[in-house]
Image (cartoon, rainbow, N blue to C red; front, side, top):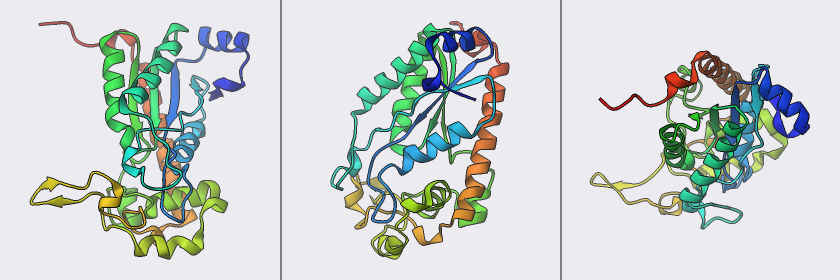
Length: 255
């Protein structure tokens, strides 16, 4: 694994002409995660997982920290970009890598609000035959570990799963004294619906503390297990992608 920003331009050229086949781009958010977790929770997790793989055929790009977070805007410290702005920005980063000859990428995402924009971005790059980008959420392929550790397979927000990741990666950033406060004002799950209609558009519509789930279920040991599983799955995904001829990843011709 090479960090692109640490290379010189000549060093990057050598890498692109030789071993590097896949670009890995971490994306996340700077948004409220309740009173106990830092604003940078999502991008810290994505960046750590992206940098955790040990492969010489990968270049890890600088993290895109701010994402699509308008639904958290009532909470202090939250930053956001419009979905279209975020989609274009990520797409242009990956298109620039493609211009250097690295046309396959994995976007390691740490924020659920980015998912739709990343999917559109990947589809557009593929349709334009510029690059093939696989959007991948670090929590999306835990092989049952989330169920084992937390009794559920859906990630909440600033819940036990995210608390565990931060506790493992940057334990000094977890305000442990505020975990019970965060949970007291938390929603049981993400969102709010009435008779099957989604009516919770902002987090303040369903959570007093900005949390969804049980942050007190988190621990650094659980975070270590989550991190190691996520890195292993990312490594396997990158391995698969390196084996695919680029042309085979492009859209099928019209029938």
